[in-house]
Amino acid sequence: MTAWTSTRFTRLLNIDLPIVLGPFGGVSSISLTATVSEGGGLGSFGLYGYDPDRIMATARALDEATNRPYALNLWLPIPGEEAPQPDEAQFATYVEVLRPYFEAVGVEPPARPAHYMPDVDGQIQAALEAEPAAISFVFGVPPEDVIDAAHARGITIIGTATTVQEALALERGGVDAIVASGMEAGGHKVSFLEKPENSLIGTFSLVPQVADAVAVPVIAAGGVADGRGVAAALTLGADAVQIGSAFLATKQSAASNGYRGALRGPEAQQTVLTRAYSGRLGRGIPNRIARELTHPGLHAPFPVQNWLTGQFRTKAAQLDIPELMSLWAGQSAPLIAAALDNDDDAGHLLQRIVDSTTRILDGSI
Ligand SMILES: Cc1cc2nc3c(=O)[nH]c(=O)nc-3n(C[C@H](O)[C@H](O)[C@H](O)COP(=O)(O)O)c2cc1C
Image (cartoon, rainbow, N blue to C red; front, top):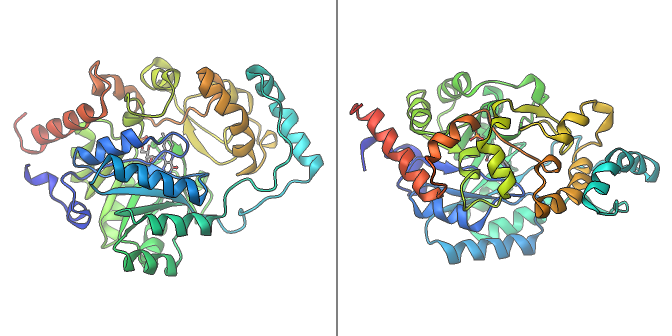
């Protein structure tokens, strides 16, 4: 190992590489998380929508697959947006807008559920009891008692910021490391102090500002798909990078063939920010859902929209119809095909990224 691979973050987690696999709500896989951890990085697994039993089962499966450190990832409720409960009439309006998509995959529109998300306290308790090396959070500052309980079990807590103000709030809250997530990143814009539309800062600007503002290790996320990105992020002051979209395109990912193909194809050249898939702003490849549901009045609020579209997206994923799935992807997607080099194994991708970072940072090219 060369000098760049040892950072405050790798020493904190006792891992070999300052490379984190981004968690994927809905499309994380045991195999991909374990592959990145086994390769010396920190594999993460997204637990969005998982109830406590499923969280425990996932952690046990990860423990079977790897003895190396990994992170579990949870979403915190944003104050004021916790639990919208549309009445029957409102719910019927939201369903009506989505009816053509249900029909396209042959699924009956659902009845109004009692809950749209599992209770977050139960999720957090299960994640703590699972005792992963780290728990990463998005959409807020984890409560003090959660951080204390994690530390008592030796669990590292990672928060996620899209602005310097959010990074400072997370540091004041007691997190051990902070993901600085640039607006290039695939998936949801995880802002929690301001509207995401007012917090769209690029990785190149955000990372050095966050690194200057906080004392804890910083993980750069958004736009990194190869060794050039890793070298740049470390040069900007990051202690690690978090890579999502590029790993999502590998064979170990839970993304369907069509989704993985879209990540490597021409459609990924122009990602868009949309609320159509989930009711919250996120970056993805424009498909039929994103193109047709552009008017804000057409979306139910989060998490209602995410639950509703999830009812046909699951079937669309089984049938592999990318036009009717959430095609989350970052602006770096057009770099992925070259980064994979006709070899979609995640372990090989990780090694290729490490080798090219070494060549750049050790000055041998
Ligand atoms: C399909 C998808 C789902 C994601 N889900 C989550 C999530 O549940 N929690 C989270 O912290 N980040 C999530 N992210 C963000 C990634 O973990 C990572 O930070 C991001 O992809 C990095 O930017 P990149 O796409 O440019 O590599 C998701 C990203 C994608 C592409």
